[in-house]
Image: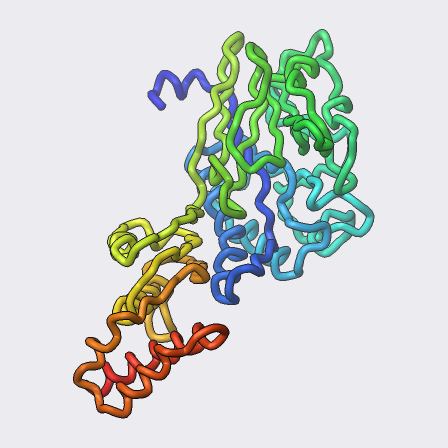
Length: 384
């Protein structure tokens, strides 16, 4: 941003949502699950760093900050520690209950609960349907919390219209869905004309994990900032926050995508051993959550090399893997034992005889026989 552009900005807001703190990833092994769960809180640390970097006037957190109404105590404690550690930027932070973590008498946001009592003074929970918060003298936030995990009321209907003598910047913050799919009910439906209807300059929303402005053409921005860390495969345009720059009227706000995520989720299918070798050469593997499908046919010798490559990718108790987090689907690997005799040419006769008997196995014994041949091949390599 140039100095002249900076001078023209009268308000800076960092808009984020969908942290999903405490989320579990049970389809991953224990160590990788811990990494992914911990990545949620590390994303909050980077959000606070971004707020400090740009010296924003406020940070708006638009719901689903926890993955459930009563998250694990370690998730709550981790967030409190992050807030306490933040020293350089202590501007107002507004926490909005979403549909994953709604405001209920027993939820994490409850008044006099273990989290509320320990929040720093600059962190505020949206705990009323008529919640308002002034940012200095020239801006005001209107926010409406979710009070249940599902609902059919548009929360923006509770935001008051502009008073005739009110010339402040008006920002709304709600959590819900603006997309309508045939055959599916919309949870907390929000009309895409809400910024215009509510006479707002900006609408901060959460729920969808992709970064997008969903406002009707010609109306002030209505933005999903995305989840700051992706939560699953296939989330397009996730991993961001929205930096919103308000300039002097009549110009509207400028919305900038700010990268927050560390992890990139990707699916890859390798249909040859050469494709696995090429994957090994990539330089972005250490920050990747990779679901690797192996759909290939290999000889016993190639299978041995493949297993070594997979150890390098995944890691072991002795070394870190090249891939940050790896899931392997090896159900479609087919073993070709046709050239095994040549590979065992120098092996003792008894081992070659065992190999011949295993190769002759048919029916239900074939899979077990193939695994035994693989072990036999490894044994011969160790003896050579």
